[in-house]
Image (cartoon, rainbow, N blue to C red):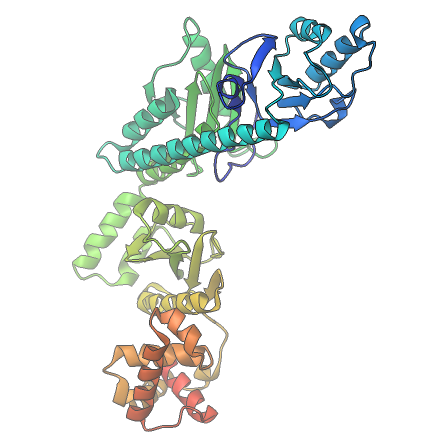
Length: 502
């Protein structure tokens, strides 16, 4: 069956009933029903309703003190109906509080729970229902912390595997190890390219292998001329007790990741999704030939070729958009995060420059949009000979985005006053006006940012990552060297025009 969207973090794992019974501070004791390690509870709920069915979601430890039990219940069918309704609603277990209503657990309730296979737990007088619920949430928090740590460690190991000389087999090996099963990469024609790990289960290997290959076909993009609705990005199934999952790789070329495991923990979907992202980058690089083309373009540039000459090797049109981005978390971006950003923007041309990621995006294919977790600045569409200009525009747009706390700022591409002045004359005017500070990049950039933010000291300091007093000193120094009054709007307009020509 097709899966829904991948969760940002794995869901909270359920709690084993055995772990709750092991809490000595609670003193709980199971007195009826099956004692199976696989019994888990998702939450605790208290109800004194004679029929709790309408109020249960399934997976609960239902807690009751027996207030709802009539005096003659032991001689009739009351408990049989009560327990059957809990089981029908999907309740995981029943907790019965001894005292103040009942001195012991009714024998008929014990028999009904044994009959319907519902675990029955005796709650001693000293243990409150709120204490039981708190213990459930504590165990769930511990399980979630353990699962998140497992997912984080898996992500790190998968990223390290992707950096090895044999990245695809290494990622598959790590993925198979982390989920305790088998991981396979299927080609667009359905054939198995590489695999790692073993199929879980005994005697059903051929059946499970065929089912996994069939599930991969479900998520593989349809060929041209195909029919039907949209293809799901992932799908899951269970065959012979083995959990199967398939993930379409984002290259759009038909590669699919298949995973088979004996069990499916809450974090396994997240771990497999990370593996799918890495394999998408690796297979896209290998199959499309863009890696070789980019290497060729780099060599030609190093040997003196102009950008206009190497641009055709990058498989794009004539115009480009430069995007600068910084992660909102503040930490320096790593190569995997930068590659993921490039994939989201639609380009493999990515460069990590300190705490800024620069992406060269072909214009017209996909308009750059805000990316979750990133602050971005985008240039106007430029031809290859203007890549350096686009880089400056993107840097300024990013500074403005950070200062205004916007997710994305684009460099304005509407014609202004600069369109009324010939470029050569505008450049000469700028050189003449800014000559006193032209040799000091810190002064020119501070003045440009300060003017773009309407003279705000604080926002300029944020945009430049300096103290506000540093901004004041630089602006004052620029004003003194230019011998001008920055409070005059005409002066500001003239300086802004000149700075825009640099």
